[in-house]
Length: 179
Image (cartoon, rainbow, N blue to C red; front, side, top):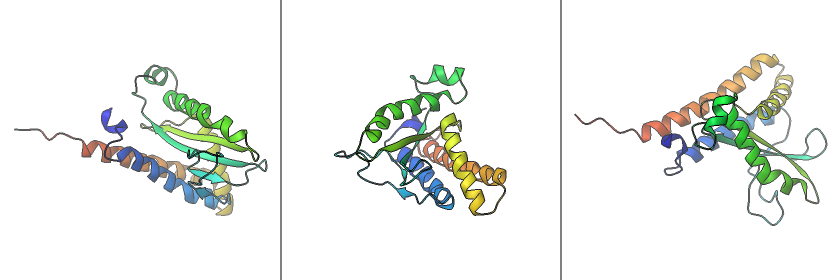
């Protein structure tokens, strides 16, 4: 548990950044003209609610996509995670929405907010999956590839990035057995 949630040493942040960076080309391939870590999305705030910002989404409004990886073993998530598939991701996505969605919408130029949350074991929030499938649909069309193959490769890439980040965190914190 500690290895996958401890912010000391930078493994949690690095895992997040690698996930964001691996997703960015897919947003570009989908023709969404993404911007990475766009500052100033919330007026008069230093908060950065969007790892990937799409200036114009389907409805003509900008959209901020915020990646997060949570741990289903956290005390406040474990019961829900055990009862609902992707429960920890669903719960954490709700917390992210509560934190940023209203602030982004209540501006001169409203921005939609979409958390893209998965748990450290690979389960995604269903709303995140819907958004990622839309990205894959655009990317598969622009690349003239079969949607199911494109989606499978994209989601496989994301899973591998998170698994590598988990492995790195675990290995850096392992205690060698003393003979």
